Amino acid sequence: MPKLHVVRGRLVDLRRHVNVHLDRRSSFAPSERYELWIRPEDGKERQFIIHTRTMPVRRRHQVSLIVTEDESPQVWGLVNRSAHGGTNYLRTDPPPLLRLKDALVVSAIGGMLIWRWGSVGAALSIPAALTYLLMAGLWRALVRARRAATVDAQMAKEKLQSGVGE
Image 1 (cartoon, rainbow, N blue to C red):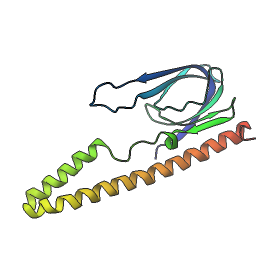
Image 2 (image 1 turned 90 degrees about the vertical axis):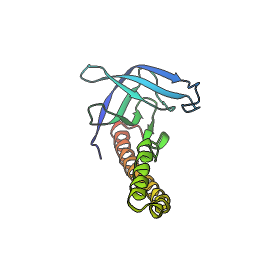
Image 3 (image 1 turned 30 degrees about the vertical axis):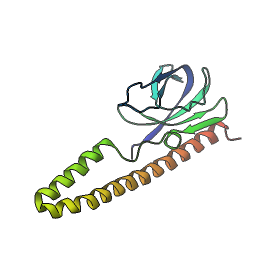
């Protein structure tokens, strides 16, 4: 699991972007993202992008962002110190349990079974594909729940430190 750290500061700018997909190849629902500019105590502004429909902050609010320590950090949680609120983005906007690469893996499994055992492999490819999809989805759900619990704990710690939970 990626390490988490907290970025505390004042929200300098907040922009909402909505992309409406009019072609049928994409999802029918609009995709929203927020661009946040935070000024931490050191004065050097940082930009964060969050793909969500939930944003419980406004400009000039004091916030704490729970982010991953990656090259391109992802925001997993937000605590609004000014308005006494927060959001765990792993709970409000969870990532999908199945991904496009799963279709490729299922195709490869089916192809290997058919290549190796012919018609018996073709019959076995359906239960093998279903088993793989079930296991992949279950594993990702467990990882997601564990990460969300970690973010919840970090958010509670932030609220306690700032007096937001009182």
